Amino acid sequence: MADQPVSSVPVAPAGLSRRAQRFIETEGIRVHRQDIRRQSDAWVEHGIPAAEIERAAAFQDRWGGLALPPAPFYEGGPRILDADRPEEIPAEGWSFPAGDCRASMAYSFMIGPDGTFGLDAHRWTPLHASTDGWVESLALAAHARRWATTVTRITRKAVDALDLGEFEPVPEVQGVTDSWWRGRDSLIAVYRGEAVGLHAPQCLEAHIYGGLDEWALHGD
Image (cartoon, rainbow, N blue to C red; front, side, top):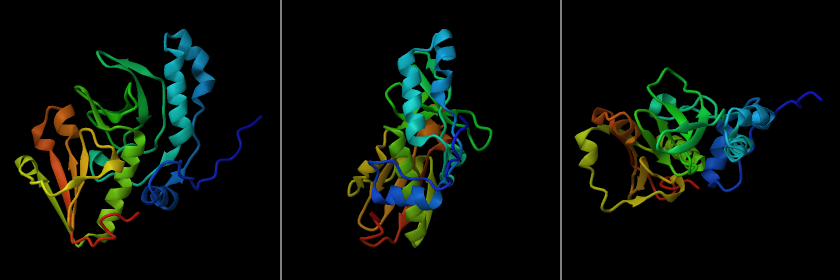
């Protein structure tokens, strides 16, 4: 039987914030996704554990074929969320691709052995504890850009000098190496992934979204 046509209008997976749900359903596009399970027998013959194939298939069920607007860092992030053949990262374990880059990059986007979303560069660098966290961060960035009266980009030592004492972490982005912080009238996104994964401190960057009122600080 031929595959059924896929609606281009995505339905947000369960468990996300209302902000992220709106972001997916108004800004995202769903395209055809490959069926990982059809390749499982061949992959098992090549030594890939069945449990790792099923883990990639579960990702595909939840996220496969979802195209979202570019991220404000990492040259926009994956073009389309799309799993592929799992591979073993030395000293880390089994991971699988999360989707192709939009441009030629010095790293790839992967889902780690523990489900984290991150970069495979000179070293494995988890950005968020799950793909949900990555998508929440995209939604929050889009929201902050829309409502902030000022947006300030800082780099390198200025990022480390940020005083976050009166800020609280934004839990839904599930930050690991990257993080979001909410203050009295501002949101701050800190992007450490390239600096850590590429051993490149010059890549450390933060975006400060200022002039936000009580609603705009959350938007959910």
